[in-house]
Amino acid sequence: MLAGAGSGKTRVITNKIAHLIRGCGYQARHIAAVTFTNKAAREMKERVGQTLGRKEARGLMISTFHTLGLDIIKREYAALGMKSNFSLFDDTDQVALLKELTEGLIEDDKVLLQQLISTISNWKNDLKTPAQAAAGAKGERDRIFAHCYGLYDAHMKACNVLDFDDLILLPTLLLQRNDEVRERWQNKIRYLLVDEYQDTNTSQYELVKLLVGQRARGVYA
Image (cartoon, rainbow, N blue to C red; front, side, top):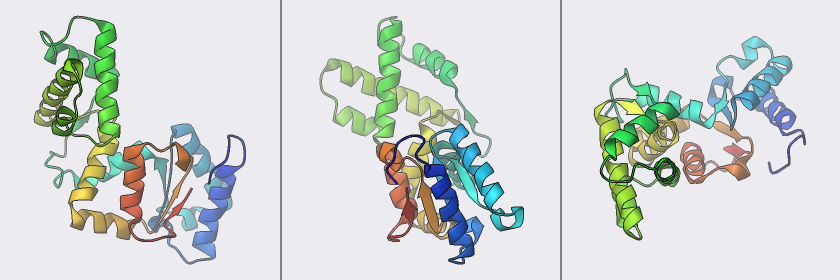
C-alpha cells in the first residue's frame, strides 16, 4: 500500500487482518504485520485489539522489522552458529569497540569514525559481508573501511554480540542460505503485511521476499 502519512494505512491493514481471520479462515498465528517504528506497531496492535477479540487475535505477530528479525535469531541461533545468550550492542558500545579496533588504522577523528560506522551500516543494509565489501572497495579509504569492517565482524562473532543492523542482516542471510529454515518460516508466516513497503531498504525487501516465497498473496503493503 503506497500512501502518505495520515492516509489511514493502519486502519486498512487492521481491517485486512480482520478479513483474513474472519473471512478467509487464516489463523492469527500464521499472520504477521511489520512496520518501521515501535509507535506504529503499538498503534496497530491497539487497533487490532479493538477490532478483534483477544481470542481471535491470539498469536498474531505485529512488530517492527528489527523485532521480527530478533525473533528469528532467538529461534534460529544454532543455525546461525551463535550461542543462545547473545547480547545486543547499542550505539555507544559500537563506537567504543570500533574506536578500539581501528586504532592505528584511521586517524583519531570523530567525523571519520562516524563515516566508518555509517559505511558499515550501509554495507549491512545492502547485505554485503566484509569479504564482499573488500572486493568492491574503490580507493584507499574504502579498502581501509572494509578491513575495519572485517575486524569488527570477527570481534562481534567471537563475543556472541550483535548490533542493530545484524537484526535484519543475519536472518536474511540465513533464510537465503538455509532451505530448511526458510521453509519453516514460510510455513509459520502464511500472510505478511508490510506497512510503508516503499521505504524498505535492500535487506528488509529481501527478508520480505524470502518469508513470502512464491505466494503471490503473501505481501500486502
